[in-house]
Image (cartoon, rainbow, N blue to C red; front, side, top):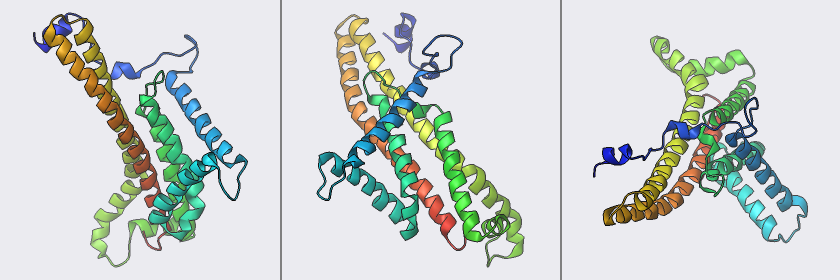
Length: 262
């Protein structure tokens, strides 16, 4: 039996509509499941680091060690490696960004929640704008003024002046528009596509096992369901990786803004 005939009998493949949730408290309210996941993720990150640091000791316990290791990962592997010694002052923001994104991303494979809030473009866009504001502000302070900052960015020294006609608008658009846009779209599309594929494997496998009669349906459905388990672990890896990439690029942009010429 063809895929078309299976769909005709009732299987509805997942699509963009599966990313639209009605308000949790009925019409006239605005609080949706993605917003709930965002609140829960924020609380989870805050509670974890509060408990880890509440009774800090010279010889750390297990929770304190976990918190220090997590914070140290962002400090050493992202901030210091990407920015240098000056990156220390930006560790609080970068650590908050990384673990907040990791919590929102990983919610896509957590039972009951099972939805990555960052697949809704508003959340990555807001965080990308925050990073954009920070690294541009850092650049303006480093250059001692808005005019000098944009001059250094759009008109780097040592280039023939006719090249500036093409280079200046490219640098401006790249720094002010393209950077936050690529940060946003990279994260959103990865979370959207990963969740869509995972849901397809689960729903398709369930349909073939329970609705599609015959050995072929049971076998194909079982393979699909087993594949969804493998995909779940892979998706968890991708979710953490995307949180790392978003934070790393934010750090690289800050590091570029701190350079003498950028």
